[in-house]
Length: 301
Image (cartoon, rainbow, N blue to C red; front, side):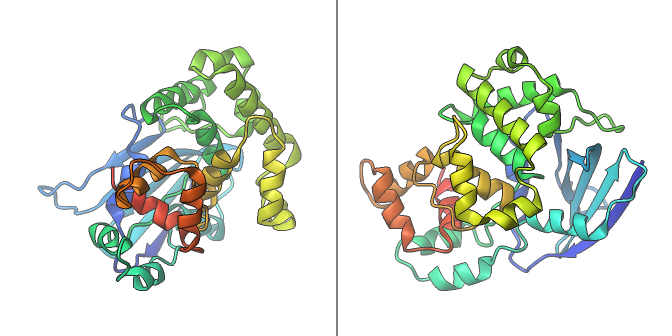
């Protein structure tokens, strides 16, 4: 096993609780474990452990927060020491450190509808997962079902793939491991027929055709990425928007088809309900920060 530790400085308004809350969803804590700050302990740190696949090897990612910094450690079941630049890029993306939250908040601090939401959740950022594939796998899993049901299916998928770090932590499987699973194995995890086929198809495209690789993204560009993914059966606009949001931290995703965004926007506008088209039109005024607006709408509960 090899390890690397880096330290990142956090902006003054960094919302640690928001990052941890996103990774706290799975009560079984198979592939994520949250460390809460213990006021009675000498250490005032909090953080999380997450099992990931790092360059085809099981790895344990550990993040520990203090008031001003995040200490990030990666322990891999490999003989190759992780590259500092790669770990830094991963950590900064997962913690949303490239998101210009300050500029967003400054611009809309007096907005008649957003100002109160911003005051309630200052420094709110969009946490991302360890890889774009994990984000899209979660998006496919969560299509048109409750978060509770999706978490249950995700847990079964992690166990079915059976990838574990030497520490014992399960790792969210990458495309290669999922493409090795059978259709029946996914059905037994709780995936519908269409979702099982969609996830297997996406996994094979990622594993065999290089989807989500750096060169693939750079060569295609945003719009071609959308077009390419839409060509895969079972992947629609919501899946793409959510996958780009959670996989890459792209801040200008509209999410007008997200049920929670529409429901809470209707509350904000004091309407009984609102259509996706009306939601998209309303969110358009906040480009290039539409994803951050959606995040604040999610926080309305």
